[in-house]
Image (cartoon, rainbow, N blue to C red):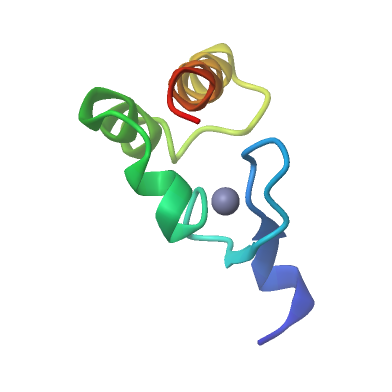
Length: 68
Ligand SMILES: [Zn+2]
């Protein structure tokens, strides 16, 4: 797989490399609440700098903080 098509899982402390079309590694994705996962999908077309996308990232971080 080409290096450009992957990124590191955004969960703090996680070093798994995942394909660009997936937000996080499988374990961390399913650690998110359903509403947060829906929000991530709903904002996937936005750039990482868009305020709505930023809000989705914050929701994910908050879910992960709550679920060690
Ligand atoms: Zn991860």
